[in-house]
Amino acid sequence: MFAKDPVQGKVKTRLEPCLGTDRILDLYRAFLADSLEKICSVEGVDRFVEVASAPESGFFFAWENDPRIRRIGVQEGRDLGERMRRAFEKYFAAGYETVVLVGSDSPSLPRAYIEEAFRVSAGLTLGPSTDGGYYLIGMAGSLAEVFDGVPWGTGVVLDETLARVRTRGIGLHLLPVWYDVDQPADLRFLKTHLNAQALAGGEDEAPATRDVLFQIEQL
Image (cartoon, rainbow, N blue to C red):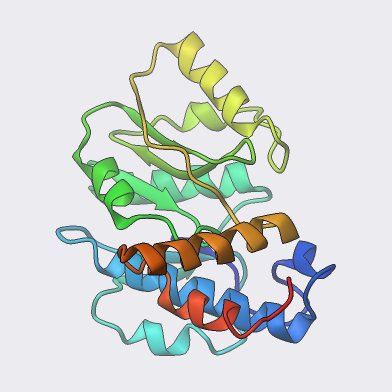
């Protein structure tokens, strides 16, 4: 899992039009808690956390001693593409045959999607996100060339990655579309979605996030 250290004023800053930094911090810590519990519930895999910067907040201290997490480390690289490339290369070099990378911006993501990414035999697995990127990327063998020249942080990340898949003839498995939570509209939809899940009696994928969101009356 790729994550950021939950430091006030440095996470989810695009939510500031609708929330103060203290509430955003509470929310992101909930995102992390739900995302960590989700990956820990996936059976038959080793689990690692790569933090964008050296952890200073203390949030990850408790998780460092959790036996379900093999290691909490720091991402290496100048941009997201290089950081993901190095993560994949590191774990393939360690002997893993399949490596799946998931972010922490989709707390409601169904666990089944992560599990599916480990079952497929295609070279590359992508979980397309509604913002034009992807919430998950998995590889069965190193295919780091798909990161070359991708304009990270834009709405064409998925499209550009697919172009590289096409020109290189890489086998692709596509997961269902899901959504990241970055903008106020995303957050409002997340709250509505979690409320709908609760009313329908569906699986509770994000209990910590739900508890924080339902304390917020106006979004």
